[in-house]
Image (tube, rainbow, N blue to C red; front, side):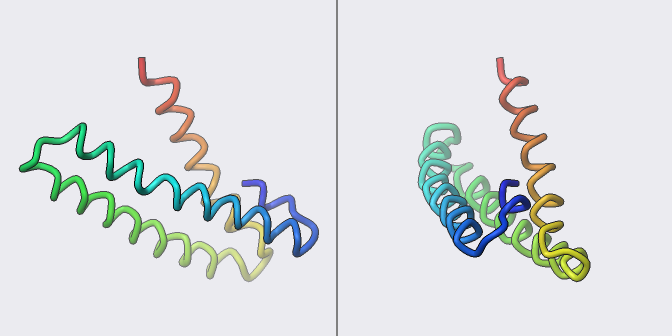
Length: 96
């Protein structure tokens, strides 16, 4: 989301670096939690869903970037991040 507001290459570099570190740090946690949340016979399906969702998300993001990025290179970052922020908010406050 913050990538939309960058004005220099250095700002873009650091925003994307932080994003990469965050996502890279989240994947081991996700797979570790799967071991706790799913029985042994269900883990392959959970792992497949996470892998499929990751691939689908990357493909969808590339499509959005290709479609909306022709008018403004910052728009794809907003279109991808706003639904993620809304979902994170719903999950955070919906979990009681």
